Length: 363
Image (cartoon, rainbow, N blue to C red):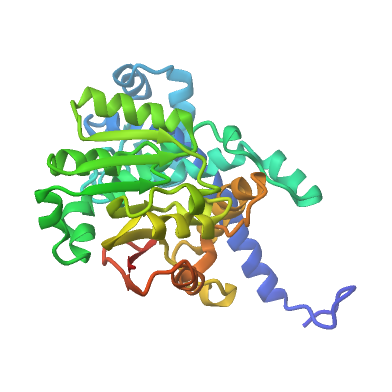
C-alpha cells in the first residue's frame, strides 16, 4: 500500500486494474461510434455478402467513399471485428460476427444498439447544462431517437409479439381475431400497431404519441399497407387522466413508454379510465430495480442508466414532468399501476429479452 494525498491507503494493484479497464472502455466507446457508422452505411451488410475483399472493392460494393471506408476498416481490424490478411490486403467480416451485426441477423443486430452512443452524445452539451441549472432537453433535440427506438423494438418486441407477448394474456389472441378496440399509448412510429392491425383485420387500432414526426411516419406506413383499421393521433398525454375516453378500449398497450411521460401517473389513470371493465392493459417497460445496488449485476445496467439520464429522464423534465427515468424499477412500476387503480398486476419475463419486463394489469 502506498499513501497519497487525501487518502489513508492507496492500492496500486487496484489502480492498475482500473486503468486497464478504462483504456478498454475508451476503445469500446470508440468502437460503438464506428459500429453505428457501419450499421447506418450498410457496410456490415455489404461485407457479409462479399468474399475477402480490398478496401476499394468494399467501398465500391457499398457505394461509399473509399478513403473513409479504409479508415473505418482500420478501426474494425484493430477491434477484432474484421479480419485482415496483410499479405494480400483483403478484409473479411467473419460469419460469426456478421450473425450479430447485420440486418439479416437471426437474433438481434447489435449494430442497432450501438447507435444510442452517438445519438446521446449529440446532446451532451445540453445535458451538461442541465446538470448545472436543472431542467431538461426536449424531444426536438433528438433528431433520430424515434428511428432508433423503432429499430430497437423491431428486434425485441415485434418478432415476439404474436408468439410470446400477446399470449401472456389468456384468450387475448382469440378476442383480437373476433374484433376488439385497441389503443397503444406513446406509440412512437407505431410499428407494433402496424403489425397487430395486419394480423387482426377485424379489430380496430389507434395510437397516441406526442411526436408529429413519429405519427406521420405511422400514418404513411399504415396507408401504404392499406390498413383501414388503424389510425394515429398526435396527443399530449399530460392530462390523459381527465381526457381519456371512458371505457373506450378492450385492450391497451404501452411499449417502453410510461417512464418517459411528463406525468406518468396521469397517463396510467387515463389508461385505467379508458379501459373497459373486462379489458386488459399490457405494459412493456425496462427490467431493473429502483435501487442502484440491485442493478450492479444487470447485463446492460450502465447503458440503461445512460439512456435514462440523457433521454428518458431529461425529456420528461423538459416538460416540467416527474423525470422518472428508464430505471424507475419494477418496484416503482408495480406501485404506480396499483395506485392508478388496477386491481391485479402480473409481472412476466421473456427468456429472449434481457431488457424488459411485461406487466399485465386488469381493472
